Length: 158
Image 1 (cartoon, rainbow, N blue to C red):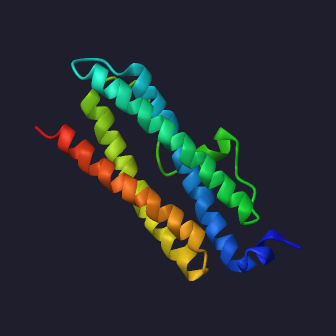
Image 2: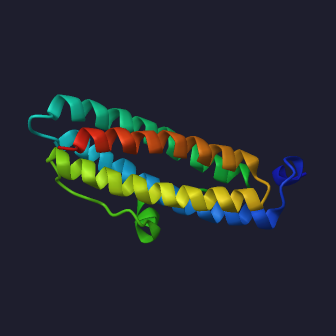
Image 3: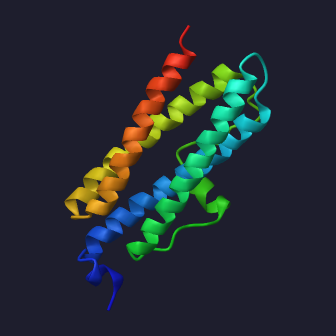
């Protein structure tokens, strides 16, 4: 018996969710790599605060990457795992050698804003498919990211 039969989801709906999650996985992988670069390269007055914050953010993002990949597997898909494949489809762009805190924070806020938009789309697709687990997952991500946007915006304001 197939997993989808056991968890009471139809294949067509699950395939739509999987396709959306594959896109989200690619974007999160590029976002994760950017966060690592910010963590390694940050300089200046805010080094101690931002270096530590970027580490927390990439650790959280790594957990989300794993959750997304595992959800793809649960829904009968196979998560992409080559960075070259991620770069072909990701809508978040790689960045390089950003050491300025304000530039890094602006990039992070743009990336999170994009991810929030994609997660809202997935939430809708999953809801239409009766996939409450993916809906819950996206809701949890949105709750965390909306708070992070508020905190980073407050920190970055002058």
